[in-house]
Amino acid sequence: MEGGLTYKQAAGLQLNHEQPGEALIDVPDEKGRVTTRPFKECRVEQMRQALKLKRKPTSSKLLPPEAEARAEQYRQAVAVQFPKGKGTRVKVLARNDKGSAVLDFTGVPMEKVDQLLQALKAMQG
Image 1 (cartoon, one colour):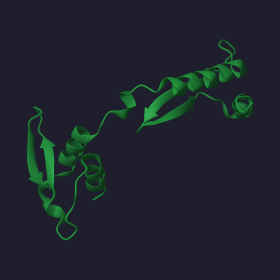
Image 2 (cartoon, rainbow, N blue to C red; image 1 turned 60 degrees about the horizontal axis):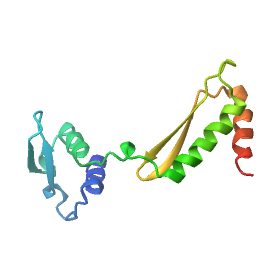
Image 3 (tube, helix red, strand yellow; image 1 turned 60 degrees about the vertical axis):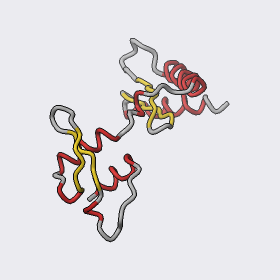
C-alpha cells in the first residue's frame, strides 16, 4: 500500500519485510487520542489520519533569509515584465517544500510566457 510506504518514511518506521502487516501504526481518533494498531488492521482513512499525525509541517517553516532574498529578486524581475494594473495578475510565491525553497508562478497567460522567460533570464546576469 502506497500510504504505508509514505507513513514508513514520515514515522522513520523499520519494517519486517516478511510480515509488513505487523508494523505498528499510531492512529489518532476523532478526539485526537492515539492508539497503536497493526498496519494490517488499519483502514485507509485511519492511515490518512496516522500520516497526517506524523508529517512535519515543512510548508509552515520560514525560508532561510538568503532564499527569501533571492525569491524577492525573482518577484521584482517578474513585476517589471508584468506591472500591476496592466491586465495580468502574475504572482510569484516562495515556499518551503520539505526543506527546499520552491517558487510557484501563477497567473501567467500562455501568450506571455516569453515575457516570464525574459524576466527569469534577466536574473542570470
